[in-house]
Length: 94
Image (cartoon, rainbow, N blue to C red; front, side, top):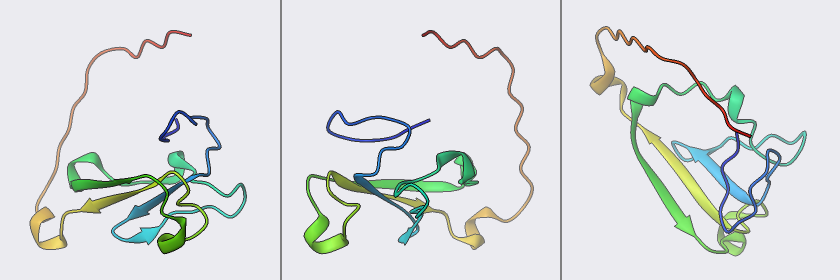
């Protein structure tokens, strides 16, 4: 899985700064984000902020093509139990 902007999409894309709750999820091993290691539950995401365009002057080296900030809900809003069931098949076309 890869997320990128401005047409530079690949698994090891490193030109997009990704933050979760304002904290960088940068992996120094390959200068990008390892998406499979991010364990944020989709139901806990409040909103996603996207800043397009070059932001390296303000945000640092990885913000060449933009910034994505994934903002999660507060702990107060996520109290209780959660049950999710999915059915179906995953079909990937290559």
